[in-house]
Image (cartoon, rainbow, N blue to C red; front, side, top):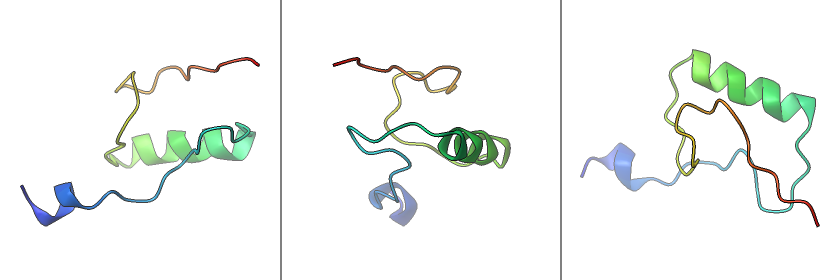
Length: 53
């Protein structure tokens, strides 16, 4: 395991957080720059799963 793989990074979204246009824009920006995003069910980040209360 490399050092980069061991670091958890900074979460883009936290459970319960509102998904704003700024967050969606940041996710798109990170994808375009080739950032490695950890944790999404859809690794292509083509969609976000939202749970309604």
